[in-house]
Length: 200
Image 1 (cartoon, helix red, strand yellow):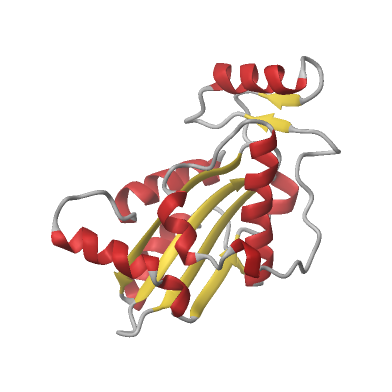
Image 2: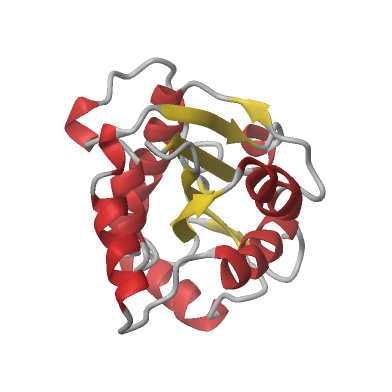
């Protein structure tokens, strides 16, 4: 699952990480206000519908012309929001040559309507919640790069699951046994499909 590896590694390098120093607190406060800034770019990998894994980048222009962004790795087949991170203060060249280049090494991104990426992210979170899965914890901060869920106007129907049922495809950082156990507890054996150890 290449998208999983790319975003995880990129997040370690470019994501805002917890610290007790003043610069972290300032960055966090700016992210809380992100919705006031205009959208700069909204991107997704073109294979997201066929592969069930959406690699999303939403960026906004700060008043100082630097870029604030949130990234979201979304499993539309089963687990919902698998990974996310955000940060502020990237110059255009840092954003283009470092962040985007690392996020989309294997699949050149395409422009995507903001309303659609909101449907993908929030819809997948709701679908996964019904199966007992929560979004990755950093969504507590990166959600502020998105609009409020109540502000979203549905534009294009998005299908969750595959062929009408959950389809779990294991990723390199998954606790496979606990995920299968959770699905069996929620749905019963034989009521979902899974693929272990293979890329989407």
